[in-house]
Image 1: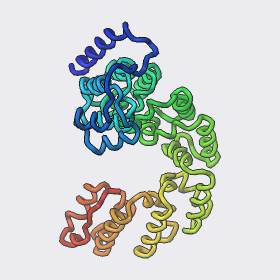
Image 2: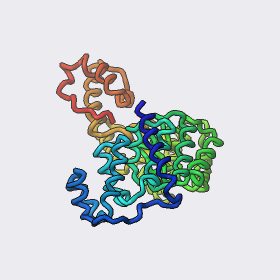
Image 3: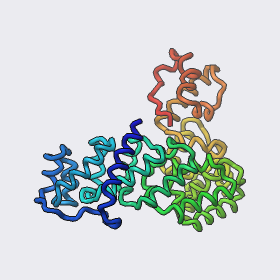
Length: 366
């Protein structure tokens, strides 16, 4: 009901104005109106915070057509944007105050409404990436329609746009679409691509030739394209230049890993290669000093490199060590560290709280 109401408001407004406006007119032409300082306009006229007004003043000192800028802000309010949304848009895109609502704002919002987005989602997306209002309506509509067709749901699209609204400002035909199609041709399923789009969207903005080069490198390592880790290997390599890749391997060599160990771990779980060298060294040192584990332990259990040393490994190691010494627990350390918080508490803490209670620290679950 709300979506239809806003769509009706915008459609009527566009219809009534478009007959009298040039198709190429994007910004309001100056009219007889006395310019005022932007801080006065934003704070006194529209209740903006002094912090936002100060930021905008660094880019825009005067509002030359206050009545026309009023109409811009009123359009946002009519379309359900909160004051916080509007402040964020103006702060990062001050030029919007000079924009023509019928040409710059309404068509973009209408595109979202027509595709079923809620007004709340639209406000969040535009506030996260105000420059979407600078993108042509046709280009924006193509991007939204393509992603909706691929992702399948508005909620899925909203997740992508809220996290990476800049997607709406790039040319999908040059990078994203060819890269998605290429990955699909490599056997990567839609579900995995969806997760990558949400969690690591910039991977798809690489030039298609660069993605093909990454896939060749992964293939040369002997990766099975059917492996769930295939896409993660591509992602990890995309974040490492050849020089950084060699430095990362050198760090593992210093831990005592052989070339075969490095390749074995990368093929099994490439994610540790995205972890900082400092964190991996600290984890390896702790496990060696506290538990007597040598470098082969991390080779066999590379997922240990992904956990927080202070938040997970140390407190769980202490509890695990006590319970093992009293023959109350048979699980291995990697198994204990892998447990979800609630499972760990249920199996290793609550039944033995009188024994391990003082060792229970805040576990951030990482």
